[in-house]
Image 1 (cartoon, rainbow, N blue to C red):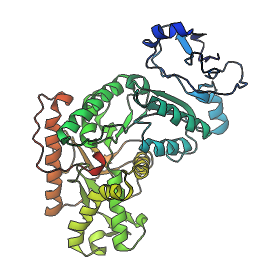
Image 2: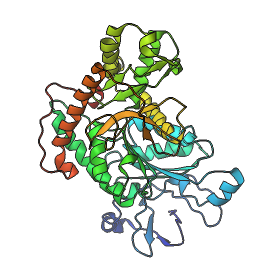
Image 3: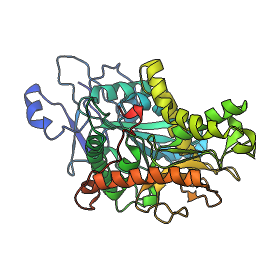
Image 4: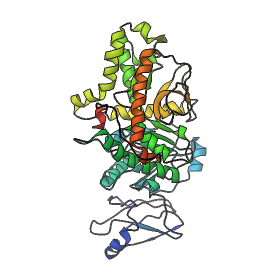
Length: 440
């Protein structure tokens, strides 16, 4: 049986079937290789994990000589040792960055991971390491994802590791894309969903706080994403609050599409689009500050009733309509919006434009209550950071709609106080179901 030669600090040995049970508890969070593979000739000092017979133990074990390692094991061809510094010099590559993704075996990730690996997100000279977080139930699916990444031969994808322990998977992560969340089941109230997913994000926040890069950028996708992001950041006090984002970029993209359709232009003519508030049916697509080919939307689309009623309604319910048409929630467009959100932070914002992101409200210039994660207009210099846009205008209609979303998020905050360290939870959520269809 072939085993991995991981590094000089590891010793390799064969494990007999009778030894597996006693070893399993120590290694329960380490990936188990069951990939049948052909022998390969590799350079001296490298190794690759394979199993050769189905009736043999299929777990190659590397025992650390200096105590158990907290780093997840790599996958397949990504276990090869290589000299990245030499490759950086010869190919002018940047320093490798580490990206952790939760819910990595899901349909959104199935679209997202290959965009990340291809270089379209961080650039054609940026090597990356992917760390994929799943659950015990999804572990074999994670192996399948890793196999597909392996077979795709992406030159920029230098490392892939998979695991079910966030304290291992988030180790040294510079980006954390938190997609995994439990959908709402039949009869489940929004308060129940807030509690169930809030516990997941509290744990992930603690893990990020313990092992991730101190400047890790976190994008929360799992719903209810605004409050999940708030819970996550409250459990990660050593990471700047500005580094946490709730994804509202898909809502922004949908709003741009509808304005372009109504105006009879291509969507790239629409700019300065803001989604205010919560990722729910209280969200506020802002047509007051948006522009079409540099001209205020209200001067191009003069149908005020359409803007205030139909436009807003279409954007809020777009996901539900898609589900009825296709029988599934949006995945590819969500992955694209995650890519857009990342690129907005690593690429300078075009002069005069901005983008939407759910960010922490402390110090905001709009009068929105502090201590929330609220979607607002942002600009970036391309360094991963952002600043809130100050040159926006408000009218009574916009302020009234924003206030409703603010009240909802304050109620969600009170309902999850037990997860943010702010006391006993009191769930007084607004009447009516404001949950978006994608949460169902």
